[in-house]
Amino acid sequence: MDLQLDGRTALVTGASQGIGKGTARVLSAEGCRVAIVARREALLEALADEIAGTGAARPAIIVDDVTDDGAPARIRERACGDLGGVDILVNCAGGTRPVPWDAPDDAWDEGMTLNFEMLRRLTHEVVPGMRERKWGRIINITGTSEPGAVNIASSAKAAVHAWAKGLSRVLAPDGITINSLPPGRINSEQILERLHKDPVERQAFIDANIPVGYFGEPEDMACLIAFLASPLARYITGEVIHVDGGMRHFAF
Image 1 (cartoon, rainbow, N blue to C red):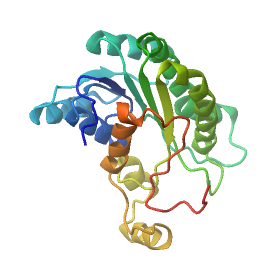
Image 2 (image 1 turned 45 degrees about the vertical axis):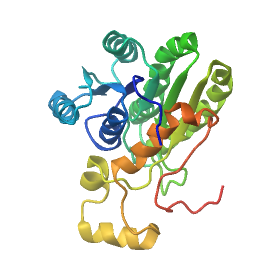
Image 3 (image 1 turned 30 degrees about the vertical axis):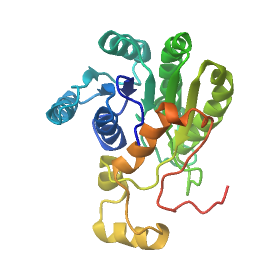
Image 4 (image 1 turned 30 degrees about the horizontal axis):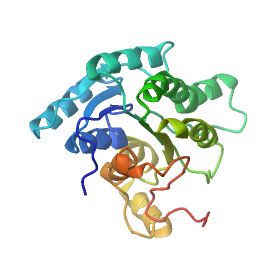
């Protein structure tokens, strides 16, 4: 299937590892010109070299911290300068933040800023250009709606789902879609080095919770992202689509 992405431009945050990295690979392979954003320049350079080595266009590199004041505007300005505009925004930057129930306000401020507020601000930076061109795709990588305990990221991602649903209704007449993808357990730095470091515990978790029998790969997310970013997905907007190997228990 031709996703009709050749020549489209895409901005991917959190691209140094995991889902963001896999997304940059897949979108580049589909013909997109990509700008990749993260804090660790060496990892971005290595990814850009890898992608260029496949014959795809070498991604533009933007080294920035999305939580810094002014970062959304800087990232948009740099991406538009390098790409000529942003057709597709993939919001991958984020991180789990498990906390005690009485965690202080500064912990909540940091976690909500990373996982919701800066995602919202960066989206607002690129939407005007999308509206002018009457076309755009926004894909948010979010998180579980079934938290086992208090986690700031879970609260932030629930906010993303509600905000994105509302925004989808406003932007639909301009040919812009916005969808949210909560990943299950995807092989990534965060999952393998923080959440499931012990291989024995990891396998026990899989056996108890994941019907397909394994953790997913970043490309399992990225292939759906590429479809949602394509013109073929024009009638899908405001949705929350779980990519988790059947781990989620709820039918709705």
